[in-house]
Length: 250
Ligand SMILES: [Zn+2]
Image (cartoon, rainbow, N blue to C red; front, side):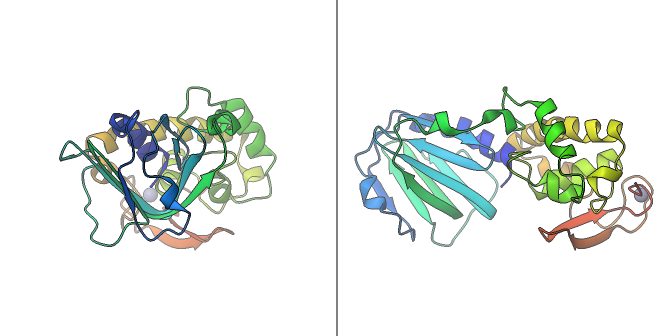
């Protein structure tokens, strides 16, 4: 799950705002017995975090590398494409539907307004996103590989591995290049693409056309020159990168 999917989730889950939790299950040990009877005040996301605010505390769900969720409202699935058979980490049932979350980290936080503690200027999909700040932080990590910095949630909150690979392909930059070796103009382009591609991702995801439109992530051939793509776990994060040795030579 990447930021755009969580932004979509925030929108899809709005029917649960104002609803009371009727039933909870799942294999999490966080003290979920506190949740029944609680009324959802607000649901929002920050990057890959999804937050349910209740009157006295908040439920923070962090979707890690393989986290997913699904939801039904009035008997109809609102999250669409995939169905999971395994036991959810956390299931919340309301009078009007159900949310199931998988492979995520779940926490209860004693805060009546958790939204205040988030910095939305680093969320690439938020209206308060600050590209100048991102550029400054990018430059401050000059000796890091660009793929590692793009995945840094304190700089590019919401950017996941798919967005990272596609953005680097669009900018013709190799994932293993150090930030300080990327020309200033190209650095600005990367920052701009982190947002514009995330927005595009969101639009495709909304109509279930994401996979069809990916150009490089998990592909075999370069969309530009047809050459066989390189595939390797790169950088200190060791996440899968896909790139073309010719078109992304920088
Ligand atoms: Zn190529």
